[in-house]
Length: 170
Image 1 (spheres, rainbow, N blue to C red):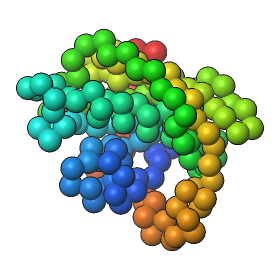
Image 2: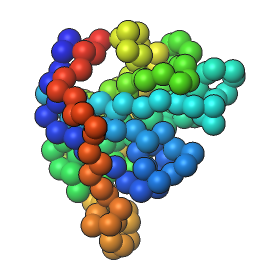
Image 3: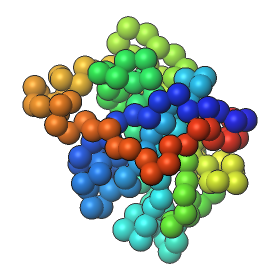
Image 4: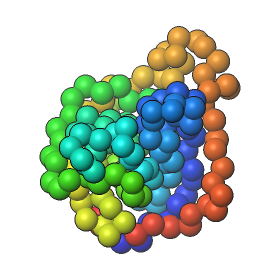
């Protein structure tokens, strides 16, 4: 299926998944898609390795956690998801040094708890890992303890060329 981009989400300074200043991080860019899906574009490197040329399972877990948890921001960008539980299935090795995609969406949204699903795929649309997860909603300002996070560290990072749409397996 082809999904149109509706908006690009912000990045932070030091987050492992989306932080632009984290030298060990993945520097993931997140795009909101039609159908209330969230897409993260990233590339793992040697520092993210487990077995040779394979991404570490903990890194895969972090990517899926961030992507599903951030899907809530499609409707309210000042609320974050704090992870309660995750169930991940590793289907195929996740390679390093190539563009990969993490996709997440909300399946249940109640007053304090939400649940979601997601997957990681390659550019050939092979699904490499899947996840279901449950989160507690927390206002951003509660998590960052009143720091100037939103104004100073939650930043919009422009693309060289903004993508218009993405083809995804589901």
